Image (tube, rainbow, N blue to C red; front, top):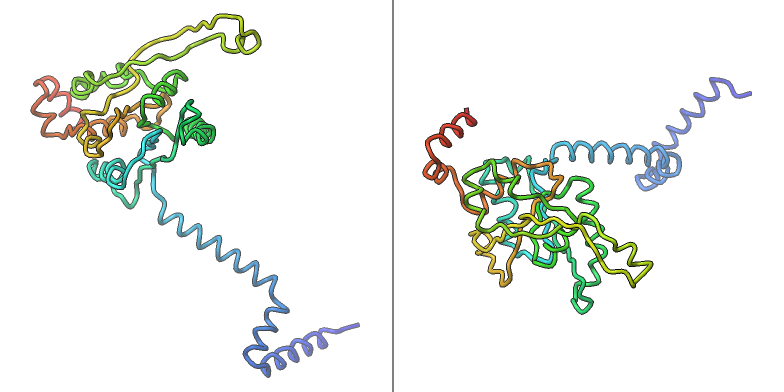
Length: 269
């Protein structure tokens, strides 16, 4: 039976043998005898380094915006993200704006983007369900789709508490119709039935034609903005609307009545 002495002697012989090896042989020796512990050590170091890097580089998402049937160039992308954050004096090293692009919704089979509709719809539904979509900039077809499915806020109720913003945006409010209930399932099984639906109409979108930020992008068709009903960044959404229409604090003081100015001062204090 091997004794402690034998084990110590064997260990000493191994060390002596290792010292006598050349560099390449030493590396081969370490790999042959210690590759599993080394692999585990590398995994541990990687996980630790990744965790530390994530901790120091993590950014809070201030706003989630989706572009549907709308393509943004580099300038507009910057204006909708970093430039907006800078206007709020946010720290760009700690905050970011998420901009979803490449999303398309169309029923036109001849449209070159029709093949992306299903995947886009799944991404949109997942983002809304996770409360990771606050705003959507879209064309008329996408605006109709979001409206019919009941994804968009009633703008009268959302903006009405900000009197200056409401006065500025109200002329550009665009009504659309949400389908509350219909008999589309019955029609699927019996196409002789007549389609019937219970609907509701209210302002769900903002025509952005008068927004200086959007005007600079040079869109040929109207771009609409809608606010997702379950947004978790309501205050930031209001700030974003102020930003889109250039409503800075100097203009607020000039346009507000004395009562409104007092109310604003009270909020600031």
